[in-house]
Length: 436
Ligand code: COA
Ligand code: AMP
Ligand code: ZN
Image: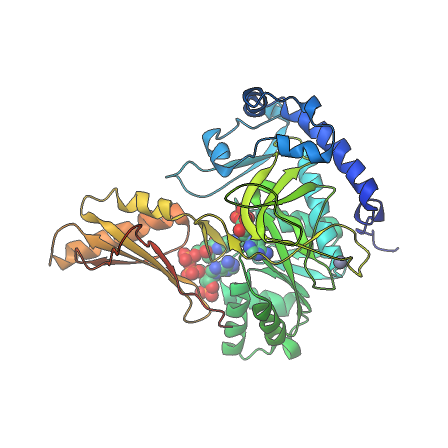
Protein backbone atom coordinates (compact mmCIF):
# COMPACT_ATOMS: atom_id res chain seq x y z
CA UNK A 1 0.00 0.00 0.00
CA UNK A 2 1.35 3.45 -0.89
CA UNK A 3 2.38 5.63 2.05
CA UNK A 4 -0.08 8.39 2.96
CA UNK A 5 1.04 11.59 1.30
CA UNK A 6 1.66 14.54 3.56
CA UNK A 7 1.97 16.87 0.63
CA UNK A 8 -1.40 18.62 0.38
CA UNK A 9 -1.54 20.63 -2.86
CA UNK A 10 -5.01 21.90 -1.86
CA UNK A 11 -3.25 23.91 0.88
CA UNK A 12 0.44 23.99 -0.01
CA UNK A 13 0.16 24.73 -3.72
CA UNK A 14 -2.76 27.15 -3.73
CA UNK A 15 -2.53 30.27 -5.86
CA UNK A 16 -2.06 33.48 -3.86
CA UNK A 17 -5.66 34.68 -4.12
CA UNK A 18 -7.11 31.31 -3.11
CA UNK A 19 -4.63 31.07 -0.25
CA UNK A 20 -5.57 34.54 0.95
CA UNK A 21 -9.26 33.65 0.77
CA UNK A 22 -8.55 30.61 2.95
CA UNK A 23 -6.54 32.75 5.38
CA UNK A 24 -9.33 35.31 5.61
CA UNK A 25 -11.93 32.63 6.31
CA UNK A 26 -9.71 31.16 9.05
CA UNK A 27 -8.87 34.58 10.44
CA UNK A 28 -12.59 35.39 10.80
CA UNK A 29 -13.12 32.14 12.68
CA UNK A 30 -10.06 32.87 14.86
CA UNK A 31 -11.33 36.35 15.72
CA UNK A 32 -14.70 34.91 16.75
CA UNK A 33 -12.83 32.38 18.89
CA UNK A 34 -10.65 35.08 20.48
CA UNK A 35 -13.71 36.85 21.81
CA UNK A 36 -14.07 33.93 24.25
CA UNK A 37 -10.89 34.99 26.02
CA UNK A 38 -11.11 37.78 28.61
CA UNK A 39 -7.73 38.99 27.42
CA UNK A 40 -8.68 39.52 23.77
CA UNK A 41 -12.15 40.83 24.60
CA UNK A 42 -10.56 43.56 26.69
CA UNK A 43 -7.84 44.19 24.09
CA UNK A 44 -10.44 44.75 21.41
CA UNK A 45 -12.59 46.93 23.67
CA UNK A 46 -9.59 49.02 24.72
CA UNK A 47 -8.55 49.61 21.14
CA UNK A 48 -12.15 50.25 20.10
CA UNK A 49 -12.23 47.65 17.39
CA UNK A 50 -14.42 44.65 16.87
CA UNK A 51 -13.82 41.49 14.83
CA UNK A 52 -16.23 42.90 12.21
CA UNK A 53 -13.77 45.71 11.52
CA UNK A 54 -11.35 43.19 10.07
CA UNK A 55 -12.78 42.86 6.57
CA UNK A 56 -9.64 41.97 4.64
CA UNK A 57 -6.18 40.64 5.39
CA UNK A 58 -4.85 44.19 5.09
CA UNK A 59 -7.04 45.16 8.05
CA UNK A 60 -4.96 42.91 10.29
CA UNK A 61 -2.77 45.95 11.08
CA UNK A 62 -5.70 47.36 13.08
CA UNK A 63 -5.27 44.56 15.63
CA UNK A 64 -2.83 45.31 18.47
CA UNK A 65 0.22 43.09 18.79
CA UNK A 66 0.35 40.28 21.32
CA UNK A 67 3.62 39.91 23.24
CA UNK A 68 5.35 37.44 25.52
CA UNK A 69 4.67 39.93 28.30
CA UNK A 70 0.93 39.55 27.65
CA UNK A 71 1.32 35.81 28.05
CA UNK A 72 3.22 36.31 31.30
CA UNK A 73 0.71 38.77 32.70
CA UNK A 74 -2.21 36.47 31.96
CA UNK A 75 -0.48 33.30 33.13
CA UNK A 76 -1.69 30.61 33.18
CA UNK A 77 -5.14 30.56 31.52
CA UNK A 78 -6.01 34.18 30.68
CA UNK A 79 -5.73 33.68 26.92
CA UNK A 80 -7.71 30.46 26.86
CA UNK A 81 -10.64 30.56 24.44
CA UNK A 82 -12.27 27.20 25.22
CA UNK A 83 -13.57 25.67 28.46
CA UNK A 84 -10.58 24.21 30.35
CA UNK A 85 -12.27 20.81 30.17
CA UNK A 86 -11.47 20.84 26.43
CA UNK A 87 -7.76 21.52 27.00
CA UNK A 88 -5.73 18.32 26.92
CA UNK A 89 -2.13 19.55 27.08
CA UNK A 90 -0.08 22.53 28.14
CA UNK A 91 3.53 23.39 27.58
CA UNK A 92 5.26 25.89 29.81
CA UNK A 93 8.46 27.87 29.47
CA UNK A 94 11.16 27.36 32.06
CA UNK A 95 11.83 29.72 34.89
CA UNK A 96 10.12 30.80 38.03
CA UNK A 97 11.63 34.23 38.54
CA UNK A 98 9.94 36.07 35.67
CA UNK A 99 6.53 34.47 35.44
CA UNK A 100 6.67 31.68 32.92
CA UNK A 101 4.29 31.37 29.97
CA UNK A 102 1.98 28.54 29.05
CA UNK A 103 0.51 27.42 25.76
CA UNK A 104 -2.68 25.37 25.80
CA UNK A 105 -3.91 22.79 23.31
CA UNK A 106 -7.17 21.03 22.58
CA UNK A 107 -7.19 17.58 20.99
CA UNK A 108 -7.69 19.19 17.61
CA UNK A 109 -4.77 21.56 18.20
CA UNK A 110 -2.50 18.60 18.88
CA UNK A 111 -3.71 16.86 15.72
CA UNK A 112 -3.09 19.98 13.64
CA UNK A 113 0.36 20.34 15.16
CA UNK A 114 1.24 16.70 14.43
CA UNK A 115 0.01 17.17 10.84
CA UNK A 116 2.24 20.23 10.42
CA UNK A 117 5.30 18.37 11.68
CA UNK A 118 4.46 15.33 9.52
CA UNK A 119 4.16 17.66 6.54
CA UNK A 120 7.66 19.03 7.27
CA UNK A 121 9.26 15.62 7.64
CA UNK A 122 7.53 14.37 4.50
CA UNK A 123 8.78 17.43 2.64
CA UNK A 124 12.41 16.42 3.31
CA UNK A 125 11.82 12.92 2.02
CA UNK A 126 11.18 10.92 5.17
CA UNK A 127 8.76 8.01 4.74
CA UNK A 128 7.52 4.97 6.68
CA UNK A 129 10.54 2.69 6.95
CA UNK A 130 12.71 5.56 8.14
CA UNK A 131 13.94 5.49 11.73
CA UNK A 132 13.70 8.94 13.32
CA UNK A 133 15.67 9.63 16.50
CA UNK A 134 14.73 12.70 18.48
CA UNK A 135 17.43 14.21 20.71
CA UNK A 136 15.21 17.02 22.04
CA UNK A 137 14.39 17.25 25.69
CA UNK A 138 10.91 15.79 26.25
CA UNK A 139 8.52 17.14 28.87
CA UNK A 140 8.00 20.86 28.53
CA UNK A 141 10.38 21.25 25.58
CA UNK A 142 8.08 21.25 22.57
CA UNK A 143 10.76 19.70 20.34
CA UNK A 144 10.26 16.43 22.23
CA UNK A 145 6.57 15.64 21.98
CA UNK A 146 6.17 17.87 18.91
CA UNK A 147 8.49 15.78 16.76
CA UNK A 148 7.36 12.57 18.42
CA UNK A 149 3.72 13.00 17.42
CA UNK A 150 4.57 14.39 13.99
CA UNK A 151 6.96 11.56 13.15
CA UNK A 152 4.49 8.94 14.38
CA UNK A 153 1.73 10.60 12.34
CA UNK A 154 3.91 10.19 9.27
CA UNK A 155 4.51 6.55 10.16
CA UNK A 156 8.20 6.72 11.04
CA UNK A 157 9.73 4.37 13.58
CA UNK A 158 10.37 7.00 16.21
CA UNK A 159 13.07 6.77 18.87
CA UNK A 160 12.35 9.18 21.76
CA UNK A 161 15.99 9.24 22.85
CA UNK A 162 15.63 12.71 24.44
CA UNK A 163 18.58 14.95 25.31
CA UNK A 164 21.93 13.88 26.71
CA UNK A 165 24.00 10.70 27.05
CA UNK A 166 25.69 10.94 23.69
CA UNK A 167 27.23 7.44 23.77
CA UNK A 168 23.78 5.97 24.24
CA UNK A 169 22.44 8.11 21.40
CA UNK A 170 25.14 6.67 19.15
CA UNK A 171 24.38 3.12 20.24
CA UNK A 172 20.74 3.74 19.28
CA UNK A 173 21.85 5.12 15.92
CA UNK A 174 23.87 2.01 15.09
CA UNK A 175 21.61 -0.61 16.73
CA UNK A 176 18.29 0.68 15.40
CA UNK A 177 19.54 1.79 12.00
CA UNK A 178 18.55 5.39 12.60
CA UNK A 179 18.19 7.20 9.26
CA UNK A 180 17.11 10.63 10.51
CA UNK A 181 17.89 12.69 13.59
CA UNK A 182 16.44 15.82 15.05
CA UNK A 183 19.12 17.75 16.94
CA UNK A 184 20.11 21.30 17.64
CA UNK A 185 23.00 22.23 15.32
CA UNK A 186 25.54 22.53 18.13
CA UNK A 187 24.63 19.04 19.38
CA UNK A 188 25.27 17.59 15.90
CA UNK A 189 28.91 18.55 16.49
CA UNK A 190 28.93 16.75 19.82
CA UNK A 191 27.48 13.62 18.20
CA UNK A 192 30.28 13.60 15.66
CA UNK A 193 32.96 14.22 18.30
CA UNK A 194 31.80 11.23 20.37
CA UNK A 195 31.43 9.05 17.26
CA UNK A 196 35.08 9.78 16.51
CA UNK A 197 36.05 8.84 20.08
CA UNK A 198 34.12 5.59 19.70
CA UNK A 199 35.77 4.81 16.35
CA UNK A 200 32.47 5.09 14.50
CA UNK A 201 32.42 6.47 10.99
CA UNK A 202 28.95 7.87 10.35
CA UNK A 203 29.13 7.13 6.61
CA UNK A 204 30.41 3.60 7.01
CA UNK A 205 28.83 2.47 10.24
CA UNK A 206 25.42 4.18 10.28
CA UNK A 207 22.41 4.59 7.98
CA UNK A 208 22.09 8.28 8.70
CA UNK A 209 20.92 10.36 5.73
CA UNK A 210 18.86 13.24 7.14
CA UNK A 211 19.34 15.72 9.95
CA UNK A 212 16.66 18.11 11.06
CA UNK A 213 18.40 21.02 12.78
CA UNK A 214 16.72 23.86 14.61
CA UNK A 215 15.90 25.54 17.91
CA UNK A 216 18.94 27.84 17.71
CA UNK A 217 20.42 30.16 15.09
CA UNK A 218 23.04 28.71 12.80
CA UNK A 219 24.82 29.71 9.63
CA UNK A 220 24.82 28.18 6.17
CA UNK A 221 28.44 27.24 6.78
CA UNK A 222 27.52 25.40 9.99
CA UNK A 223 24.88 23.44 8.07
CA UNK A 224 27.39 22.47 5.36
CA UNK A 225 29.86 21.30 7.97
CA UNK A 226 27.26 19.16 9.67
CA UNK A 227 26.41 17.65 6.29
CA UNK A 228 30.05 16.90 5.53
CA UNK A 229 30.86 15.51 8.96
CA UNK A 230 27.93 13.16 9.20
CA UNK A 231 27.40 12.45 5.50
CA UNK A 232 23.80 13.68 5.61
CA UNK A 233 21.51 16.39 4.27
CA UNK A 234 20.59 18.85 7.03
CA UNK A 235 17.34 20.82 6.93
CA UNK A 236 16.56 23.93 8.91
CA UNK A 237 13.54 23.60 11.20
CA UNK A 238 12.00 26.67 12.82
CA UNK A 239 9.35 26.84 15.47
CA UNK A 240 8.52 28.17 18.87
CA UNK A 241 6.38 27.07 21.78
CA UNK A 242 3.98 29.99 21.35
CA UNK A 243 3.19 28.67 17.85
CA UNK A 244 2.95 25.06 19.19
CA UNK A 245 6.63 24.23 18.73
CA UNK A 246 8.35 22.69 15.71
CA UNK A 247 6.43 22.63 12.43
CA UNK A 248 6.07 26.38 11.86
CA UNK A 249 8.58 26.77 9.01
CA UNK A 250 10.87 24.19 7.45
CA UNK A 251 13.18 23.83 4.51
CA UNK A 252 12.24 21.66 1.57
CA UNK A 253 14.69 19.53 -0.42
CA UNK A 254 15.83 22.69 -2.23
CA UNK A 255 17.36 24.07 1.02
CA UNK A 256 16.61 27.59 -0.13
CA UNK A 257 14.73 29.07 2.81
CA UNK A 258 12.03 27.83 5.15
CA UNK A 259 8.46 27.43 3.87
CA UNK A 260 6.18 28.88 6.50
CA UNK A 261 2.79 27.18 6.56
CA UNK A 262 0.46 29.94 5.51
CA UNK A 263 -2.66 27.88 6.03
CA UNK A 264 -1.66 27.89 9.72
CA UNK A 265 -0.18 31.38 10.07
CA UNK A 266 -0.53 34.87 8.68
CA UNK A 267 2.99 36.23 8.31
CA UNK A 268 4.12 39.83 8.78
CA UNK A 269 7.61 41.29 9.02
CA UNK A 270 7.79 44.55 10.95
CA UNK A 271 10.44 47.01 12.02
CA UNK A 272 11.10 46.05 15.67
CA UNK A 273 11.34 49.71 16.68
CA UNK A 274 8.56 51.44 14.73
CA UNK A 275 6.47 48.26 14.43
CA UNK A 276 5.61 49.32 10.87
CA UNK A 277 5.77 46.74 8.07
CA UNK A 278 9.18 46.63 6.38
CA UNK A 279 9.42 46.65 2.57
CA UNK A 280 9.35 43.19 0.96
CA UNK A 281 12.64 41.36 1.30
CA UNK A 282 13.99 43.45 4.18
CA UNK A 283 14.95 42.02 7.54
CA UNK A 284 12.59 42.72 10.42
CA UNK A 285 10.78 41.01 13.24
CA UNK A 286 8.55 38.10 12.40
CA UNK A 287 4.97 38.59 13.55
CA UNK A 288 2.59 35.64 13.35
CA UNK A 289 -1.15 35.22 13.68
CA UNK A 290 -2.36 31.68 14.23
CA UNK A 291 -5.41 30.84 12.12
CA UNK A 292 -6.17 27.26 12.99
CA UNK A 293 -5.83 27.07 16.75
CA UNK A 294 -8.66 26.44 19.19
CA UNK A 295 -7.43 26.65 22.78
CA UNK A 296 -5.11 29.61 22.50
CA UNK A 297 -5.06 31.51 19.22
CA UNK A 298 -2.55 34.37 19.12
CA UNK A 299 -3.10 37.52 17.09
CA UNK A 300 -0.11 39.37 15.68
CA UNK A 301 2.31 37.71 18.06
CA UNK A 302 5.70 39.43 18.18
CA UNK A 303 8.10 36.50 17.93
CA UNK A 304 11.20 38.70 18.41
CA UNK A 305 12.93 36.64 15.72
CA UNK A 306 14.59 38.61 12.94
CA UNK A 307 14.30 37.36 9.40
CA UNK A 308 13.04 38.31 5.94
CA UNK A 309 10.79 36.90 3.27
CA UNK A 310 12.62 35.50 0.28
CA UNK A 311 11.35 36.38 -3.15
CA UNK A 312 10.54 34.08 -6.05
CA UNK A 313 8.84 30.73 -6.43
CA UNK A 314 10.34 27.55 -5.03
CA UNK A 315 10.95 24.79 -7.60
CA UNK A 316 9.42 22.27 -5.19
CA UNK A 317 5.94 23.49 -6.15
CA UNK A 318 4.92 24.70 -2.71
CA UNK A 319 3.57 28.22 -2.78
CA UNK A 320 3.88 29.15 0.87
CA UNK A 321 6.29 31.99 1.55
CA UNK A 322 9.89 31.21 2.42
CA UNK A 323 11.71 32.76 5.36
CA UNK A 324 15.42 33.35 5.35
CA UNK A 325 17.35 31.66 8.16
CA UNK A 326 16.96 33.58 11.42
CA UNK A 327 19.34 36.54 11.78
CA UNK A 328 19.01 36.98 15.54
CA UNK A 329 16.52 38.38 18.01
CA UNK A 330 15.16 41.78 18.82
CA UNK A 331 15.30 41.08 22.56
CA UNK A 332 18.02 39.81 24.91
CA UNK A 333 17.00 36.13 24.94
CA UNK A 334 19.97 33.74 24.69
CA UNK A 335 19.72 30.18 23.44
CA UNK A 336 22.14 27.76 25.06
CA UNK A 337 22.02 24.00 24.46
CA UNK A 338 18.59 24.52 22.92
CA UNK A 339 17.31 26.21 26.08
CA UNK A 340 15.98 29.78 26.05
CA UNK A 341 17.40 31.99 28.77
CA UNK A 342 16.79 35.64 29.65
CA UNK A 343 19.57 37.49 31.55
CA UNK A 344 16.95 38.75 34.01
CA UNK A 345 16.38 35.17 35.19
CA UNK A 346 20.04 34.97 36.17
CA UNK A 347 20.08 38.42 37.72
CA UNK A 348 17.03 37.67 39.84
CA UNK A 349 18.65 34.59 41.33
CA UNK A 350 21.98 36.33 41.96
CA UNK A 351 20.36 39.29 43.67
CA UNK A 352 18.75 37.00 46.22
CA UNK A 353 22.18 36.26 47.74
CA UNK A 354 23.14 38.93 50.30
CA UNK A 355 26.80 37.88 49.93
CA UNK A 356 26.83 39.12 46.30
CA UNK A 357 27.30 42.62 44.93
CA UNK A 358 25.45 44.16 41.98
CA UNK A 359 27.83 43.45 39.13
CA UNK A 360 27.89 40.25 37.12
CA UNK A 361 28.92 39.08 33.66
CA UNK A 362 27.57 36.15 31.68
CA UNK A 363 29.96 34.72 29.09
CA UNK A 364 28.96 32.11 26.52
CA UNK A 365 31.71 30.05 24.86
CA UNK A 366 32.12 26.84 22.91
CA UNK A 367 35.76 25.81 23.04
CA UNK A 368 34.88 22.21 22.22
CA UNK A 369 31.59 20.95 20.81
CA UNK A 370 29.80 21.85 24.05
CA UNK A 371 28.33 25.27 24.69
CA UNK A 372 29.21 26.71 28.09
CA UNK A 373 28.00 29.52 30.26
CA UNK A 374 30.21 31.21 32.83
CA UNK A 375 28.65 33.55 35.36
CA UNK A 376 31.13 35.84 37.08
CA UNK A 377 29.64 37.68 39.99
CA UNK A 378 31.26 40.02 42.47
CA UNK A 379 31.28 39.46 46.20
CA UNK A 380 29.86 42.25 48.30
CA UNK A 381 32.78 41.97 50.76
CA UNK A 382 36.22 40.45 50.67
CA UNK A 383 36.38 36.93 52.07
CA UNK A 384 39.07 34.24 52.25
CA UNK A 385 36.84 31.70 53.93
CA UNK A 386 37.28 29.16 51.11
CA UNK A 387 34.95 26.43 52.39
CA UNK A 388 32.22 29.05 52.75
CA UNK A 389 32.91 30.45 49.28
CA UNK A 390 32.83 26.95 47.83
CA UNK A 391 29.49 26.22 49.47
CA UNK A 392 28.15 29.53 48.22
CA UNK A 393 29.29 28.80 44.65
CA UNK A 394 27.61 25.40 44.82
CA UNK A 395 24.34 26.85 46.07
CA UNK A 396 24.29 29.61 43.42
CA UNK A 397 24.98 27.01 40.72
CA UNK A 398 22.17 24.81 41.99
CA UNK A 399 19.66 27.63 42.08
CA UNK A 400 20.68 28.86 38.63
CA UNK A 401 20.36 25.36 37.18
CA UNK A 402 16.85 25.07 38.68
CA UNK A 403 15.93 28.33 37.01
CA UNK A 404 17.58 28.09 33.58
CA UNK A 405 17.91 24.28 33.21
CA UNK A 406 21.51 24.35 32.06
CA UNK A 407 24.50 24.20 34.41
CA UNK A 408 26.60 27.38 34.46
CA UNK A 409 30.11 27.68 35.81
CA UNK A 410 29.87 30.21 38.63
CA UNK A 411 32.91 32.29 39.57
CA UNK A 412 32.93 34.58 42.60
CA UNK A 413 35.21 37.54 41.99
CA UNK A 414 36.36 40.43 44.20
CA UNK A 415 34.28 43.58 44.26
CA UNK A 416 35.27 46.02 41.53
CA UNK A 417 36.82 43.41 39.22
CA UNK A 418 33.96 43.35 36.71
CA UNK A 419 34.35 46.33 34.40
CA UNK A 420 31.19 48.41 34.42
CA UNK A 421 32.20 50.89 31.71
CA UNK A 422 30.10 53.89 30.81
CA UNK A 423 26.35 53.80 30.34
CA UNK A 424 24.39 50.58 30.29
CA UNK A 425 26.33 47.66 31.75
CA UNK A 426 27.23 44.83 29.37
CA UNK A 427 25.84 41.74 31.06
CA UNK A 428 26.29 39.15 28.33
CA UNK A 429 29.30 38.32 26.16
CA UNK A 430 28.55 35.73 23.50
CA UNK A 431 31.94 34.46 22.34
CA UNK A 432 30.57 31.35 20.67
CA UNK A 433 31.99 30.65 17.26
CA UNK A 434 30.98 28.21 14.58
CA UNK A 435 33.53 25.55 15.42
CA UNK A 436 32.35 22.27 14.07
N1 COA B 1 20.33 18.13 22.90
C1 COA B 1 20.75 16.91 23.23
N2 COA B 1 21.72 16.67 24.14
C2 COA B 1 22.30 17.74 24.70
C3 COA B 1 21.91 19.04 24.41
C4 COA B 1 20.87 19.22 23.47
N3 COA B 1 20.41 20.43 23.14
N4 COA B 1 22.65 19.91 25.15
C5 COA B 1 23.50 19.16 25.87
N5 COA B 1 23.30 17.85 25.61
C6 COA B 1 23.99 16.69 26.19
C7 COA B 1 25.47 16.92 26.44
O1 COA B 1 26.25 16.61 25.31
C8 COA B 1 25.71 15.97 27.60
O2 COA B 1 25.80 14.64 27.16
P1 COA B 1 27.25 13.92 26.94
O3 COA B 1 28.14 14.40 28.02
O4 COA B 1 26.93 12.47 27.00
O5 COA B 1 27.69 14.35 25.59
C9 COA B 1 24.42 16.02 28.39
O6 COA B 1 23.42 16.49 27.47
C10 COA B 1 24.46 16.94 29.58
O7 COA B 1 24.86 18.18 29.11
P2 COA B 1 25.59 19.26 29.99
O8 COA B 1 25.99 20.35 29.08
O9 COA B 1 26.65 18.59 30.78
O10 COA B 1 24.44 19.61 31.02
P3 COA B 1 23.58 20.87 31.37
O11 COA B 1 23.13 20.64 32.77
O12 COA B 1 24.24 22.20 31.15
O13 COA B 1 22.35 20.82 30.36
C11 COA B 1 20.43 19.55 29.48
C12 COA B 1 21.29 20.00 30.64
C13 COA B 1 21.17 18.84 28.39
C14 COA B 1 19.45 18.60 30.10
C15 COA B 1 19.71 20.77 28.90
O14 COA B 1 20.65 21.53 28.23
C16 COA B 1 18.61 20.33 27.92
O15 COA B 1 17.61 19.78 28.31
N6 COA B 1 18.79 20.62 26.61
C17 COA B 1 17.85 20.20 25.60
C18 COA B 1 16.94 21.33 25.22
C19 COA B 1 16.11 21.00 24.02
O16 COA B 1 15.74 19.88 23.79
N7 COA B 1 15.82 22.00 23.21
C20 COA B 1 15.09 21.80 22.00
C21 COA B 1 13.79 22.48 22.10
S1 COA B 1 12.92 22.33 20.57
P1 AMP C 1 11.11 27.47 22.03
O1 AMP C 1 9.89 28.26 22.32
O2 AMP C 1 11.82 26.99 23.25
O3 AMP C 1 10.84 26.37 21.04
O4 AMP C 1 12.14 28.47 21.33
C1 AMP C 1 11.78 29.17 20.18
C2 AMP C 1 12.88 30.09 19.72
O5 AMP C 1 14.03 29.33 19.32
C3 AMP C 1 12.51 30.87 18.50
O6 AMP C 1 11.72 32.01 18.82
C4 AMP C 1 13.87 31.21 17.92
O7 AMP C 1 14.45 32.31 18.59
C5 AMP C 1 14.67 29.97 18.23
N1 AMP C 1 14.68 29.06 17.07
C6 AMP C 1 13.89 28.01 16.84
N2 AMP C 1 14.19 27.43 15.68
C7 AMP C 1 15.20 28.13 15.13
C8 AMP C 1 15.95 28.04 13.91
N3 AMP C 1 15.76 27.08 13.03
N4 AMP C 1 16.89 28.98 13.69
C9 AMP C 1 17.12 29.97 14.58
N5 AMP C 1 16.46 30.11 15.75
C10 AMP C 1 15.51 29.20 16.03
ZN1 ZN D 1 10.27 24.44 -1.60
